[in-house]
Length: 190
Image (cartoon, rainbow, N blue to C red; front, side):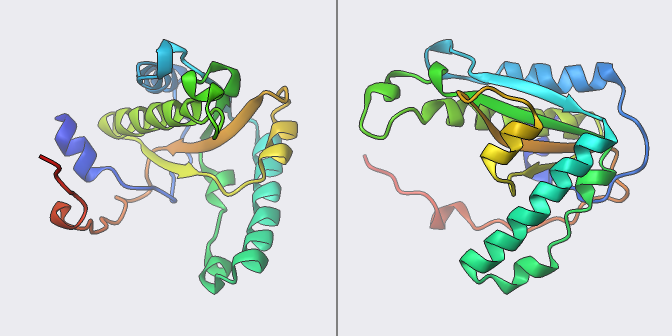
């Protein structure tokens, strides 16, 4: 698949077929993530592949609790209708973990280490595009409390769960969503 086609056509998937994903496919998708750019080539990411239903259930339970907290904190009524059952039905969850000790020079700046998160986001994007090119659906999921997710995944304190990719064969093609014209989003300084 052409890269620009993959970029235009990839959309979030929340409806997955109940079919396992072969390890070879999972590894190919993760390899795409590993080739992302990172500050000082630090490669601050780790990936945890989750197919265990008990762990998926724990992540779902945590995310439901986080959703309730988010509704109270934000007042966003629409969030009440947001169903997260796909956490249990996706054949594979891939947790993307960042290590703040592997940031860049930003770790010495006022805002502290954030570039490691950017690198992990680049890895996430590569993985989404690779999965789409291979005929799989994905969803970038972040509705969870990081300390609680750290406990679920048994991570050391320096490592941060940044996102979960839900992965599987799509039940139906994801709905295409509109994008704003680049004219509204770009400024040139010449």
